[in-house]
Image (cartoon, rainbow, N blue to C red; front, side):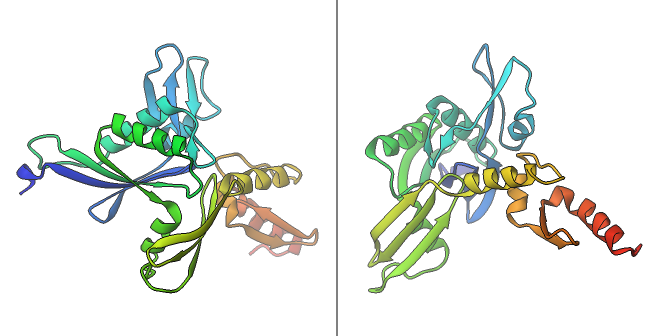
Length: 245
C-alpha cells in the first residue's frame, strides 16, 4: 500500500517559537523555530533543538537566526531552509518514490496578503505541491473539538510565541478577530528581566520553563525560580527553616 501512496499530507504550525508538523494524526516534529547557518556559504548547519543549543554560543563562522518574528516571516531564505529540513525529518519509509506533499499551514488571523504570500512561497519552495492556509484561531477551535458550524459564538484565545490570537467563531467562519504582539516571547523577556534583579540568574533557554513557575516563600517574599534552579531554591529554603530534611 505504501508503494503506491504518492501524496503525503502534512499539517504545519509555523510558530515564532516552535514549529510542529502533524502527519497521520500524530505530532512527528516539534522543534524550536531557529536555524544555524554558515556565515560564508549560507548553507544550513543545524535546525531546531540543535540550532537552539548553539544560540549565543556560536563562533564567528556560524550565525543563528529565528526566521519568524511576531508570527510572520522575517527571513524568507531561513524559513525555507528550516521548513525543508523539518519536512525531511518526517518518516516516509515504505514509499518507493518521493511523495508529493500537500500542506496545511496555520497563519495569524491578522496576516496581510504579502505575509500570506510569503508563507505560501516558502512552503512551495520547501517542496509543497499543494499549500493551503488556515487561520490559527480556526485551527485551534477545530483542534479543541468546538462545533464551528453551530449558530452560536465561540471565543478562542491562542497564545503563541510571537502573537496572541483572539477570535469569535460562528457558522464556520471568523466573525471578528484581533492579533496582538504580546505573547510568549514578551513573557520570556519579562521573566528574564525580573530574575536578573534577583540573586539567581536565568538564561534564555530556561526562561520558557519559568513561565510555569516554582514559588517558594522563605522570609524574603515570593521568589520565582525556573526549573533549572528549583532544586537550589529547595535547598536554600530548607536551610533557612533550619531543618535538614
